[in-house]
Image (cartoon, rainbow, N blue to C red):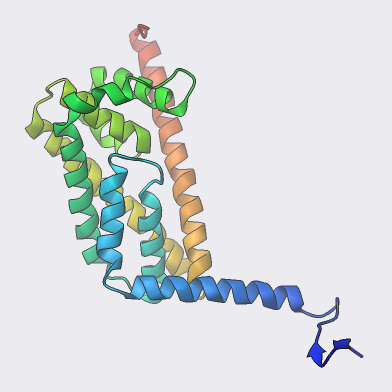
Amino acid sequence: MRPHVRGLYLPSEKGPYSVTQGEDVIASITAWFEVIMATQWIYPLVGTLIFFDCFFPVLPSEIPLNMVGAWSGSQGFPHLPTMFFTAMVAAILGDNLCFLLGTRLIALINRAQKGTKAYDALTWVKRNIRRSGGAAIIIARFIPSARLFMTILLGSMRYPWPLFFFFDTIGVLLWVIQALAIGYLGGVAFSGSPAIAMIISIIAAVIIGFGLQKGQNKLTEWWDTRRGYAETP
C-alpha cells in the first residue's frame, strides 16, 4: 500500500517520482522555449544580443545562435535564412560602430590587468595584429574578448576602414554559419528532444571554439619559433 496523508497521494520512495519530476521540468523548459522560438520577436531579440555583445561580451552571442539553430533543426522553426541575415547585420553594425569609436574606447581596454582573461585576449590581439591584420580580424570574431579589443585597437590606430569592413564581413559570415550549423546539426540529431539538442549544441560549440583557439595559438607559436620571432614586452 502506498501512503496517504489527508487524502493526498504521496508516491513511495520506490515510485517513479524523481523521473516524472525531471520529465516535467524538461517539458516546462521546452514549452517555454517553444513560445519564444515561435514568435517573430526571436529575430530582433537575438539580433540585439549580438549587437550589444560587440561592446559588452558578457554572454557570448554564439549561444543564442546555437540555440536557434538547434531548435530549427529539431522543430523546423525559427526560419534560419531570416536568422542568418539578422545575425549578419547585427554583428557587422556592432563591430563597425565599435571600430569607429576606437579612439574613445581605447582607454577601457588599456585598463586590463595582467593575469586576467581580458589581458590575455589583449596580448593575443596585439601579437597577431602585427603579423596579419586581415587574418587576425577574421579569427578574432570567434574569440569574444578578442573581437572587442581587435575592433577598438584597429579603430584607435586609424586602420583603413574599408579593409576592416571587408575582413570583418568575412569573419562574421563564417562565424554565423558556424554557430547556426552546429546548432542545426545538433537539432537534427536530437529531433525528439529540442531542449537536449540545445544543450548538446552549446557544449559542442564551446569545445570547438576552445579547440580552434588553442590550435591557432599553437600554430602561431610554431611559426614564431620557425621564423625566430621574439615577442617584445
